[in-house]
Length: 414
Picture 1 (cartoon, one colour):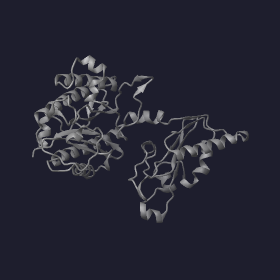
Picture 2 (tube, helix red, strand yellow):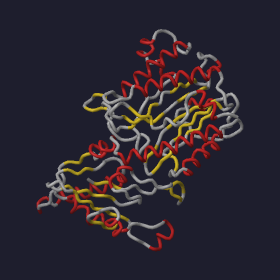
Picture 3 (cartoon, one colour):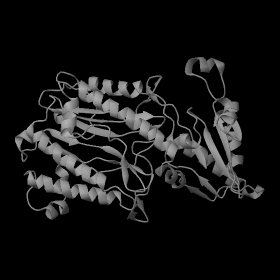
Picture 4 (cartoon, helix red, strand yellow):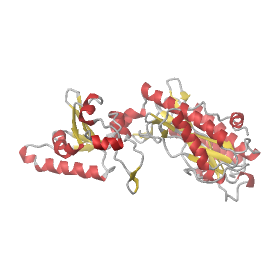
């Protein structure tokens, strides 16, 4: 198996983005440095040898960018059986890959690595008359790694619980800070300060703070818009802790109290979300949970006059998507949209203990929706929690984040 480390990426000019290691590489190696790669060699006996290619120690460069593990650190601290510098990759990799029946490598993700692997394979094929044996197949490593990552270990769950704890504090800080006159990016700053103050590395994904009609834009990012009395503010934010992230959404009233139309939409969304969480248990599927949410929301849309007709018709013609247009759940872990197949052999994957998923129904009434009651236009509601599948059913990892109407209004008291 060949796993490249992440590369540093330029933000603009000669300034880099904050480095984030590739999740698969970190899962296997634990080394948080750019460049290089890990090679895992499996022997017929079942033993696995780890070979690391890393940046060399360099006193002058380390003064600027921090200490490096180096070759010796790769062996002593990260368990490499062999370690070399990144400059030696092109020389050493062909011999390491020669003779392997299968090369586990992700094609199509990095053009530079695709080209390097292609050169190595061409060289090995060209030496076939001299007894060289290139791998017979290239296989996506996610078929193994992502199956492992999908079911969390006790150590991984500790990290996810800590991320959830950090995120709960951040969301309550947002509710307290999100008063009339504040700007979205100021609320974002409070959230991300709370992540770091409680020990997180920062946000696990781009923080969404959306006030007023911005709340109906699914992946809106915090901007300069001012929070106004009478509006709702939707916050989708998750803190990352030791490479594991939470993913939580709450919607709160800027004034401190929901208006009657906002409360009606909020309570519909909350009731459906709680039913969906109760449905999480071993053996069920994300499709089944989503179907439940679609049915219950569609019933609500019809009862509120947002849709006309009967439930079966509105589900069949997908007109519910006017107000609920995304899926209910995704896997969660090292990545906010974590790895793992959603379908196995063409069928929805049954849940098993140790999986972690989000449950996040929403209702989005566009500002220019002339068919909706005027008092509901420009209101977006989403409520999202992180749920662990347990042998007995489920555990809501983010239950500490207030979501009942009275709880939210109590935190938002002005």
